[in-house]
Image (cartoon, rainbow, N blue to C red; front, side):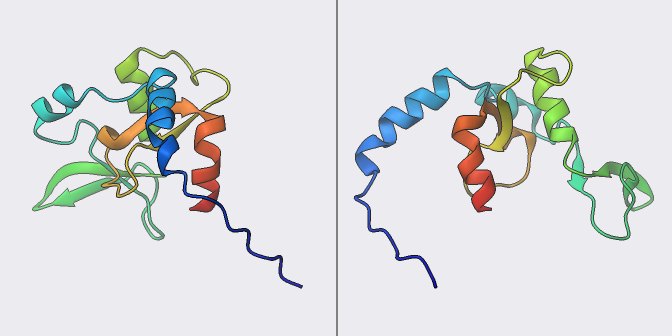
Amino acid sequence: MPLPRIQCESLEEYVPFLVRMVAKTSWLPNPETVLSLKRAAFPTARARKLRPRFSRIVENDEAIGMYDDNTTPRWAIRWAHGIPGKGPQGFGYAHVWQASDGSVANSGVTAELLTRPQDQAA
């Protein structure tokens, strides 16, 4: 038997508070740094079936990147912020904007309390 749908009020009025909370508790990419690169800092693409992890992406006989299993964005964000090792406990890596281009410029380190519901919904 399906569960009844719960109708909730709009959360729109809480958005400014949530944005401030995430901004104060997260490591986010600096927009000026991202714009100054004019290219991918870590040119990787999520590995698909038939493409081994860390194999090269080749275009016109030139290696332009590598295939990955979505690990390099976490490495890149930690490196960019000087976060050693595996990073802090209780934090996760998530896209900043819903419409993601998959780049590191759209990734941040955020408290798992704030990222987990979005990641589980995807």
